[in-house]
Image (tube, rainbow over all chains, first blue to last red; front, side, top):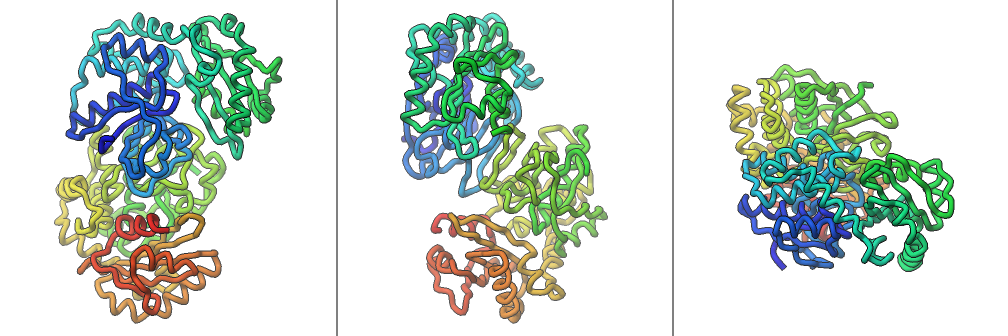
Length: 306
Length: 306
């Protein structure tokens, strides 16, 4: 393995993959040899972006050796990171999430900002370091911001994300609204994925006090169509709960056109969800109008009320 | 209390105090009302710097209310922070230490770099934001970097610290070598402090696996003179160990002229120190040639071998 590798979280999404590639590019231009890798299979949205832009898929890894030097992007929590991260040497982190379940033995470079996307922070890092952004890298960063902010419609979106999107679209030579909608729609074609695969496509694990919680999310343009597979999702979630000792499993099916979510909630700690959101689950489900952001509209609600 | 306050660690040193004042200045110039406060009494070195530069001493606080919005500088570990930090809303952190015993419920701005001093990071933040540094603030930041790097002689010093020192000395209109030595020497006049006060002057608490460890440090120009008070220090350390359930207490007396340290080590876990440094304590003491940096030369050695 290379001296220094960079990766995003497990169940990679477009920001995690594009951030790893962009960070490796930035570091190379600053004189450091850094290899971008990934911790899981690409989803269709990310595949669409990489295909469209003609960018190679990073190598898959599942664990790191002791003392491997690493850069983390788009995450910091060890539960979301590579296996054996506790024994790696974390040299840098670039992120846009809360900090939790993270520690180092030595000082490091840590850069997090409360913006909609890691690539928005990376966009600033290119500028601060006076490094020009290539056309392909601009396309990748643009794709990541469109993905994380649902085409600038998510409440996680900030003015800085919007500014970055406009400038990156210019460099990439892309009509970001058209390209963005095509890319998001490519991500909603989930028909060939099994229930198992769908609940793991974009799944994050958290410690909720002493409970093990998972919140998975998929994007769709048609909630009712997705819900025809409810029994299949529930079976997959129950299997995961039993196998991995999960206390609360929330599966959010998010309508990216109308900005709502339908959630399926299972696990012994399902009442935590009901209490947190003030909703009674009906047949294990609830409708959350206006909710599209796991980070801003689901996780804090669970954490503050757990 | 103000809407937003900024402070450094307990047992404040020059970097912690000057970083809080500089961060409050920077944020004000960016349009945010932020008040600098402190968590303990100033040491003589810091007093010298503030007196010399004609800067007011920040207000003392000991705890924060639930949901108080705060900015942390020069630290992140909750054990080193204000009482009730767990229930505050941490909006920003600017630091140069490892990350540990730290978490937030929401995304935040976090900026840490592995440089010698928090004020070196703040110096970059002024530049990145295009904010001019006033003469007084330049003097404060210069004092902090001189203090943390022992006039650029500590192994924690980086090229960025050196660059900042030269530019800040220019703005402050100070001969940094003369001013720096005077300031450091002012800090070594410890004759009027009791043993209790001395072991708390610059003391940091850490969790070492499941052990409670404290590493305190004082600067001196004359180790043998300081060691005439050994019995007094030991009594103070034993009292603190008994009162606060400390497992390992290391008190480092650092010669800033010749760059060495004499340590007094007490507590049930003193063998951890002996094993980590490969030294047998004689009469509870050991001489550590070339060791001046707690962060770079004492803490990692303990942590990696605990």
